[in-house]
Length: 274
Ligand SMILES: NC(=O)C1=CN([C@@H]2O[C@H](COP(=O)(O)OP(=O)(O)OC[C@H]3O[C@@H](n4cnc5c(N)ncnc54)[C@H](OP(=O)(O)O)[C@@H]3O)[C@@H](O)[C@H]2O)C=CC1
Ligand SMILES: O=C(O)[C@@H]1CCC=N1
Image (tube, rainbow, N blue to C red; front, side):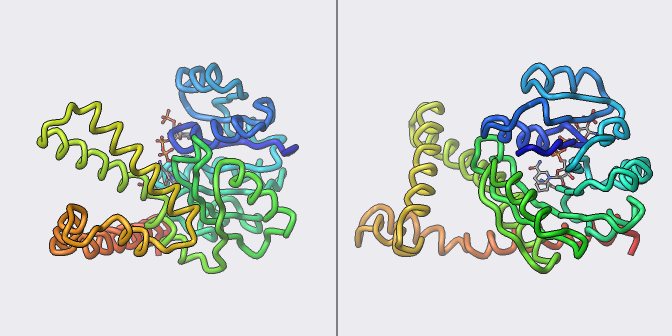
């Protein structure tokens, strides 16, 4: 990727994407990241070998692509302070903020920008990211391709043609690594109660998830069939699954994902002032 990319914000999500990009072969000198704090930047510079800057305007001055990776609540201030530089430079803008409309960010940046909204997730750090992307009407086919290449360097990409669907993407992949981490915590705690050492339990649970995910990805069978294949009639798995179904695990998951998407929508309304 020959483009110069500037990340505004160098926190969890930006460093996950940057780490993944470098592992995929992107030259660190083509990447710049900003943050207000020199000491945080020194750490990321030392770890990843990228350029860093505490001055957002200086950092976008020669950028082809600018990734907005700050918290949604401070996005307005950050964008308004960048407006003149962005209007002059006209880079492809990519926002990874949850629950902030492309139009809202575009207005804060002075309007008429080519804007991609991306909902990534932290497994981007290890090349297993899953990102949903949406483009406004100003984004050219070539810029769509740049955004695809950028996020495919750290995982899989799915484009959505309706912006509202990014809330569903947030529920199914953006926030979802945390659901699986919760599952690991719960399985480890339960296995310890059953007598296993914590480290053994954690290793077995994580490897099992990796195995199940890899099987589900590679198999031509659907998840329901793969599940059935583990369940010997009258056996142990059947008893565990029966318990999960009776405890309404599906409803819990559906309600949690609805709450996630609702929160994304509410944030968009709050932060756009509508
Ligand atoms: N974490 C996740 O799993 C995901 C996050 N997102 C989105 O990514 C965005 C970032 O989230 P996350 O990485 O978790 O948050 P972090 O708090 O980890 O990162 C935010 C970064 O922005 C920096 N920052 C603060 N103020 C400024 C400023 N004025 N100019 C430049 N940089 C600034 C922070 O520096 P400092 O620490 O010094 O304040 C920090 O480096 C959010 O909008 C979130 O919705 C999307 C998908 C998944
Ligand atoms: O929790 C959040 O708001 C961010 C967006 C998706 C994952 N983390």
